[in-house]
Length: 364
Ligand SMILES: [Zn+2]
Ligand SMILES: [Zn+2]
Image (cartoon, rainbow, N blue to C red; front, side):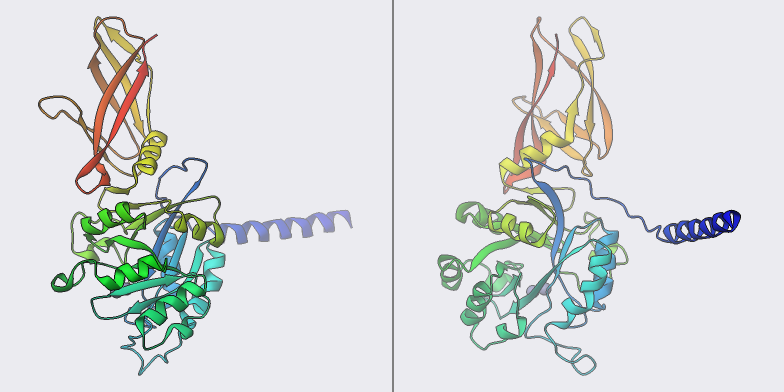
């Protein structure tokens, strides 16, 4: 009897082991540290499926998001544009319903969303965290955005420089902004960065977003046909926890940064915190007269490109992603610490303006 029980237990154990081994999916992580007591959530909040003009089924978007190291996505199909309607009936709530069970299994936050699509101006707007997309399918643009806001939606302006002939901030945008219906702008969409939008976000206290707006299947990032874009554009959201509610609260509070083409775009406060949490310098491990040697570790997934501040010729220092770099520098006299002042050229705190940083190592 006892032996039988043992045998049964062994079989059960073996079975459990087999089941758990079968669940061996793994992914590369997008490494950005948590900052300022917030969790750094990696998000893509603008994605298309066959339910509008995309070319993939909603569940595929969840698999792709997981593979790309994301925490949250919003499938945001066009409300007004359905080129596949002959084959796929128009149903605004289906993309979310279809993707939701898999999103739960893969620990991806799936946010209900849609793209309100009008000619430029006003252009295209994503409404996410909405509860009834069909109700936004109305003739008047203002009504659509107002209804989205009334549903508790977070509305942002997509690809604001999409049509160069009608590029700019128009009265209609002022109206959306003054009514507090418009809360953010894509400073990055696909392979494009919009410096004007970056400036508007700073001036008007709007939330910065960077999304893929992907329509094709993601087989690799060569689909963007841009050698500089080797990863999906990502909105980093600094949230209290990994929940939809916390994500929305952080977006409303403007706590974001955008990762795009080995560049980070955002407010100084957040980029500074990302830098400080990613880059650590050791005490000098060797000293020869006035020359010291230290190690600088960059634990982020970005190559950090710096130029020495206050020097006549730009002295460059690159800290490769996930790497340790040896630094040799001179110190004058017997100071308490060595302070190296740099500008991080690929951390943009305003269009064309890098983040100033000090790297300090104690000498005593
Ligand atoms: Zn669009
Ligand atoms: Zn779109």
